[in-house]
Structures are given as structure tokens and as C-alpha cells.
Length: 247
Image: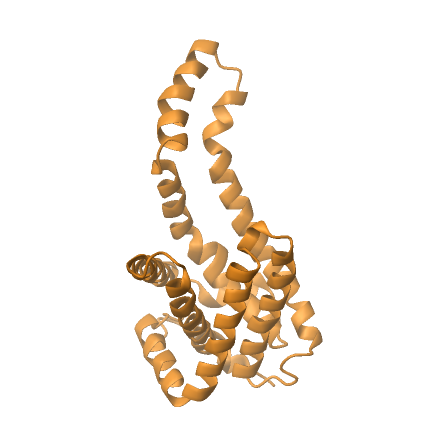
């Protein structure tokens, strides 16, 4: 529903129901996408060794194209695969990546900032031992803090900008400003979605632990959940942007 002419209140649970209905109505297609997703994830994180391999860069390009293919298929934008719009979508996706990496880098190096402020040696020694060694190096307290901050920033640096990326992929405006304008007033609803996604990720990790930490459990469940998440993003996009579709 809309609270006024400009603000639309995001129906998070209704989009979840619509996403599940889409999966049920398109089981073969969704199953095929999930299976291909599983093969790609296995290739990238098992055979190629993940981010530690130089080949992973080329894998990321292929996986990016696969994701674009899914959204073009969902919205019926032919050609699904060979399209200049996929290249055009690199503009908003690069902005999203920059925002995320910039924030993560800032948070990661923030504890070391006092070391460059010219404080007295005894103060720096105390700071190094009492904070950096105890809370950054020897345990995960600071890492947990970073994850919490990123969780609260997710609606701003990922969820809402993703609408601009989807719009660009399907051949429409990739303006981040337009995406922010159409989704304003929904921060906490997007935050709850992000919180739910994090909780699901924890559950998947626990299940994989029960299976012996082989990562195969994460790959199988992750392949399905990632594709379901893509459907959810598509349904969310429908809610905010469908009425302006002129194609």
C-alpha cells in the first residue's frame, strides 16, 4: 500500500509469498537455474579454490553474466544472454561494489587510526595492547562489530542500489538516485530483510557443520537460496518499479 503519492511501503512478507508462488509455478525453470548455480558455485569455490586463485576473477565475470541472464529471463528481456545492457549494468554494479568495499575498508582500518595521530608512546603502547591486541587480533569482537555495522548499512549500500542495477540489466535507467527516491521510507523493512538473510546464512553454516564442514552443504543450500533471493529481489523490483515499465 502507499502512505502518500510518493512513498510506497514495502510489503516484505507479501513479496516472500509471491516469490514462493513463483518458484512453485516455475519449478522446472527454477530448478534448472538452481542446478546451474550449484555447478558454478562448485566450480568457483571447489575446483578453482575460491578467491585465492587468479582464475576466480574470470569466474566472477561468468557468474555476473549468469546473474544478469536470470534477471533478463525473469523480466522477459530478449536476448537473454548476448545483450549490451549487461555491459551497461557495470556502471551501477561498480558503484555498489565501491560503496561496500569503501565502507568495509574504513571499518577494518579504523582501529589503527590512533597509531598515526602522533600520540605519546606510552599511550600508543597501552592502546595497542588493551584494544588492538585484545579485541582485534586475538578474538572476533571487532569483526562482529563490523558485521553489525554492515548489517545496518545494507539497506543503504546494497539493497536499494540493487534496484538500480536490476533496472540497468533489463534496459532501463540505472540511476541510483531514482532507486533511492522510489524506495524511500522503507529503511527498517529492508533492514529486517537483511537480518533475515543473515539468519538464514547462519543456519546454512550450522547445517554444513552437521555434514562435516565439507562445504557441500553450503553449496547445495546456497545454490537454491541465492536463486530464491534473486526471485525475491525481482518481486521487490516489481512492487516499486513495475508501473513505470514502458517496454
